[in-house]
Structure formats: structure tokens, C-alpha cells
Image 1: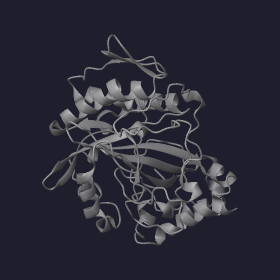
Image 2: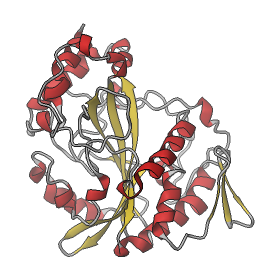
Image 3: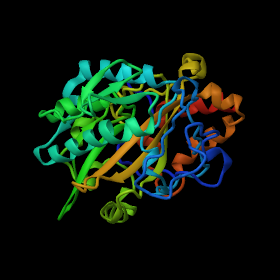
Length: 353
């Protein structure tokens, strides 16, 4: 049974980064000292040692939960992030792809060109330029070498889009969905998603944005605005946001819905749950547009922060208030949607102890 809060792809269910000091990364060791004035330029991190980069800390916990878009400007350079977890994460992704196949990657015929564009952009343009100590081009640009894993892939896109998606899945940590605009709205046409939280990624491909979000409580309050925003995203004008949930294990692969548990019995007490294995699961989500196909790329990187760590930072009561705040605000259905009835009582008691 998956016990955790759903962080549905493309979800628009929490405020991103306010001026609250706990809602921004504590440190950004990857960020260059100066940002390029060219929005399409990739700023290189020439001296980056990925093994020394601690995962960024996001703390988007508010006492009252409101469903909102809450987007913040981002740059193309920040599309992909790496840190000390990189090798472990991409190795895990390779295992998940092998075990779950079409559950974690897929493409419709209408998404083939977008997949081809994304593959070439990341392997030929973005990754070698942004992270030259990790990724390099060989053989006059025909080969992409991952210096961390030792893998080499062609920069020419594989004929099979599934093969291209598998390569992307084990090269970056970010999960990705590609959407194209149609008269009736934006439709998901391709994806690679090894770290879902509370949803089956393969069930989203082929669906419109409003259909993808059908399970999300109170989505109708922002659905039309979200659809309009997707249509207006400009190339090089990326935006980002965060989303959070709680889970009582350290697994990154959770595809069962958290509001449909296999048992109705809540966790009775923290003594019955190993709180050292309880985590806040936070996604850093990014929206961008591919220049040639004009497809919208929704990508997200997943962070796990142990509740013990949050308590040590003095944030225990704040996180507990945020959990109980799921029942308040403009989307009270989030309490059930994120699976809170299963774990909220013992988790909040632990956080306030």
C-alpha cells in the first residue's frame, strides 16, 4: 500500500516560492555568479563537482492550503539540476525502466517529433554546455558521453522514440511530459516518468490537460487559467513551482493513488511507523517550450527530505500545521487526495513532539 500524498503530474496545487525564507533553496551551488542576458543561452558550470553539490532545500509549507498556479520565472540554464544524488538516482531509474517498461515511458505518433527535438536538445546542446565536467561530445559531436556513468549515446536521435525516451530517463533525474496544443486544449503526447507519486504515468498520455487533472480537487478553479497559460508560454521564458506531499517510506516509485488505499485503517501511532522512513516529498516543477515543434515540456525533479531532518531544522510544527491545513483553504478535498487520513495523526504528533 502506498502511503503518501499524491504529487500528480502537472498538478497545480500549491504555492511555489514566496518570500518566506523556508520556501527558497538554502544554497544554490550550481548557480553561476552572473546570469546571461540572452534567455536562450546556456551558462556553463565549468568547475562543477557534482559529488560536492548538496541537494537544494525547498520548504513550501503553509498553514492554510490554497490551490493556485503560483509560478516563478526561471531560466533555460536551470532546466536540469544535478547534485550528489545524481549517480544513485540515474542508476535507480535504469532499474525502474527495466522492470516497468511502458508504465514509465511512452509516445503517441503525434509526439514523435517533440521527443526527437527534446533528445537532440538535451544530449547535443544543453547537457554538454551546462555540465562540461559531466557530459561531453565526442566524434565531432556525433557521440554524447556521460563521464559519470561511462555510457555513450548517439546524438542522432534513435528511430524508435521509446529508445530515445529510455536514454533520457537514465541520463537526467527529471521526469518529463510533452504536451501539444490542439483546438480542445493541450494533450500529453509523450512521457518518461520513473518517479511518479500517486499516479500511473502511462494513464496520462493521450489525455487533455483538464482530463489529466480530473482527480485533483478544486482544479476547476484554476483549470481555464492554466490552459491559457500553457498557450502563452514563450521559448526561453521558463517558469517553475513546487508541490509537496508526505510518504511513510523512502520509495521514489509510487504509482498507486494515495486517496485509494488498499486499507482504510489509519496508522495508529508513531510507534507503529518507523518515522526515520517518513519523508516530505517535494517536486521542483518546470514548464518550458521547445522552439521547433512548439511542444510544452513539463519536467520535475523529486526531492525527499526526512521528517527527522525537518524536525532538526526546527520546522516540525510548521510542517504539522501545513498537513492539517490541507483541510482548510479553497481546496479541502486535498486532505483525502494526498492520503492524509492514513498518516496525518501519527506524523503530526511526531513532528510536534
